[in-house]
Amino acid sequence: MTSPANGRTASDRMVTIRIRRQDAPDKPGTQRWEEFSVPHRPQMNIISCLQYIAANPQTTAGKETTTPVWDSGCLEEVCGACTMVINGKARQACSALVDRVGEPGQPITLEPMGKFPLIRDLFVDRSRLFNDLKRVKAWVPIDGTYDLGKGPAVSQKSQETAYPLSRCMSCGCCLEACPQYTPSNHFVGAAVISQARLFNEHPTGKALKEERLEALMGEGGVGDCGKAGNCAEVCPKEIPLLESIAAVQRQATVYSLKKFFMK
Ligand code: SF4
Ligand code: SF4
Ligand code: FES
Image (cartoon, rainbow, N blue to C red; front, side, top):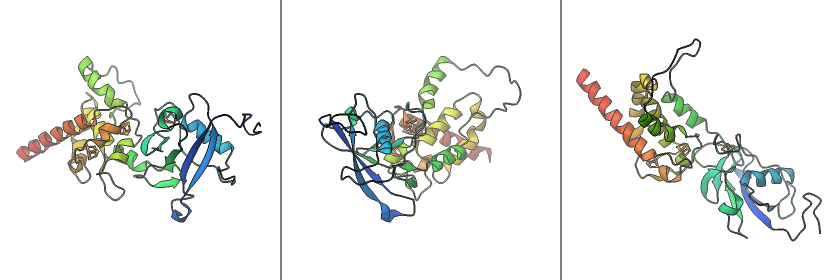
């Protein structure tokens, strides 16, 4: 038998996808699980499963439903937008291959990240993370309206330290895993601390080092980290987050001593 929707035979392997859904932030009563059956294809990822479901929004029980909502951008694990909780672990749907995340014959569960406000279904609002990056001025302060000439030379050693930190895509996996980062507090979390380190150690970025440290010495700053290291374990870019936290704590200590003696 051939399905008109996909042209595959009924004997082809199917993948079961269970999605935790909610229609709107203020509609917790609509929270539910819906299960879908998706034809298996070699090398398929979770995004391709969602695309199939979007084109065929019918549950395994035969009920017509709405198209599940999710976020995505680059489709190559660079933008972080498609991050969701897949089989209990926060990761990117675009790089999560069905054959690697799931056990054959077992459903794959998709849930929204829990630390950010829900928009709908698998789509969350990561604004807090971007606002915290602004809070610590995570950028190199240059005025780009005229030619500034060559920037300062950066040693090979500094480049080797900076490059892994620069791979952060603000996905939020480290925040999802962090026991100190909760919707009701102001902790900035490991990603923001690590970005502050990246720019504090940059020859031009360090012009704002003291402002960054001021922000990180206040409420929700580096002092709120419990140092358990969950963040480093889950980072998909393997960023040395504990090293960054220790480095920023050292910078904050030196800065507060300097402030004390300059009084
Ligand atoms: S530090 Fe890693 S886990 Fe955290 S936001 Fe950046 S890439 Fe994602
Ligand atoms: S070390 Fe622990 S408390 Fe600190 S940012 Fe990482 S997960 Fe959170
Ligand atoms: S879509 Fe950009 S990381 Fe997945």
